Amino acid sequence: MKRMSTTIMLLQASLIVISVVLGWYVIAAELRKPYIIPTPYAVGHELFSSPLLYIENTLTTCIEAVSGLLLSIVTSFVLTLAMYFYAPCQRVVLPLSIIVKATPVVAIAPIVAIWFGPGQVTKVLMSTLVSFFPILQSTHDGLREVPDGPRSYVAVLGTTRFRDLRYVRTWFAIRPFASALKVAAPLAVVGALVAEFVQPTAGLGTLLVRHIPSADTDVIFAAIACVATIGLSMYWVAVELENRLLSMAHLERNELDNNG
Image (cartoon, rainbow, N blue to C red; front, top):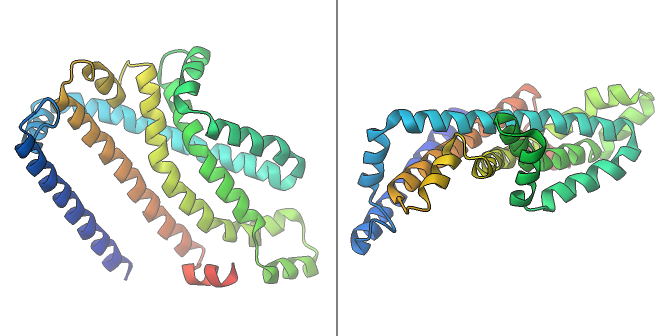
């Protein structure tokens, strides 16, 4: 069933991509202004005429985004555990995380660049800052929102907070965490791109910064296609990870909904 659903999802995604490309071709052909909207053929020709350029920059942005996402997962777990074992931490962690989330990314990026200097460290940190809040908030909520039945069972046993976390609360936090990961994965790409705008040394954001002023739409659309590929790939990996986590924990979505 899972393989069938995955196949159907891939077919649906393929049909959407084909429809978008066909619509794009029709609009570009009718408009006949390649400096505004190039044809899919022109973008494809640009990609295949300089494959190393786009492969190198795509890998750079992908590494930054994946590293930022992994760091955001670790950071969120540490902060969530701190709030679980020491409740007063919530008064500091949650307001600060909301402030970071509410502050425009373009306002934070220059400060991070000044503090940590040029290089991938700044870009990874920006990716982390943009993507960690959904994971933090969802995982924190998942640990708190345990159904009355398991909570009463734990209370009767009189177990420790650590065992309560390990044997009960962790399993109810899996689904919120996995759902948040699907949101955070594309956000990590956005954070990496914004950092590349501020520090245009390498990556797809650098290509965009260098070619936007000259309105080189072939390169711009090719870079956007690479960005979209990274975002979709990371989202697909997050979906697969969600399925595996739920399977490992022997939890079904409908069971969680009934217990919630």
